[in-house]
Amino acid sequence: MERREIEQLVRTHMEQKLEAEGKREYIIAANWKMNMSAKETRAFLKELSDTNIPEYLNIILFPPFPYLPAAQKMLRYEAVTYGAQDVAEKDKGAYTGEVSAAMLADCGCSYTLIGHSERRAYYGETSDIVARKASKALEYGIVPVICIGETLEERRSGAYKEVLKGQVDAAAKVCQEKLAQCIIAYEPVWAIGTGVIPTTKEIEETHRYIHDVLASYDKHAGAKFRILYGGSVNENNVRDIAPVPFVDGFLIGGASLKVESFKNIINLLSLDGCL
Ligand code: PGA
Image (cartoon, rainbow, N blue to C red; front, side):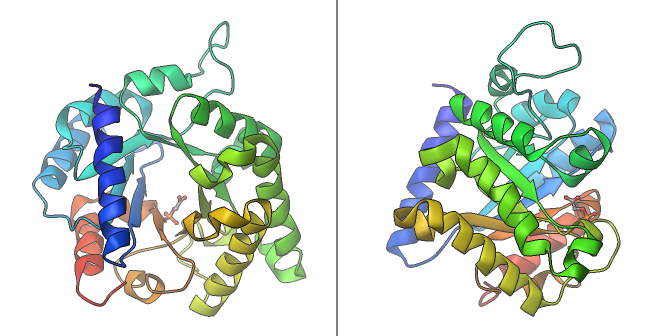
């Protein structure tokens, strides 16, 4: 049996167990972006593998492509999973520089980030491209973590709901009945790497809105949709945001690069009564 299959069996078992106990899975995802060396990656993975992680926490690392084999080799599948930061929308062929979903599956990836605001801003990824990538990942049994988020102008003008709806709609149209298998990461562009963060009231209101848009496509999946918050999450704010309704976890950039701060976040979310 492949690592990914074992991992999926373990996670399904865990989800059923948590459901029976009236608990929920909580996701802590680390987006390393274009950072870390091979040496730093190995040290990080070793340290994390030795960390005690409660079973309701699902830790997902997103290292750069070249370090995926290290994750495959060093991570214990029952504790920490991993994925890529992007995936090609095509299966294979003459697409220089692209990495296909099949290749990610070969590297044992269970997840892939898609449509991060940096990819949308610097590499011209539209919501339609993002949707096709998500659909391709699903085809290969990889869970897409679809990033959505508004700019500061869109937040200030009040157009943010329309923007977020447009981003979700594009994914819903292409993924159809598989929409509930996707994870959505809400990352306001103005909160990424800035230290500026929405209030918990704003986060709740926006996550509830995104949940309602998702639920309008699949009423039966209602409780199953998972929405992460991302943007300047760190050790100081994580406990305030964690219990906010409709927040199912975090996508963390800067604060996930140092294993100490990432472990502190895991520890803070492991404390009784935090979630
Ligand atoms: P940040 O990045 O935590 O450094 O704000 C989050 C992200 O870009 O996913």
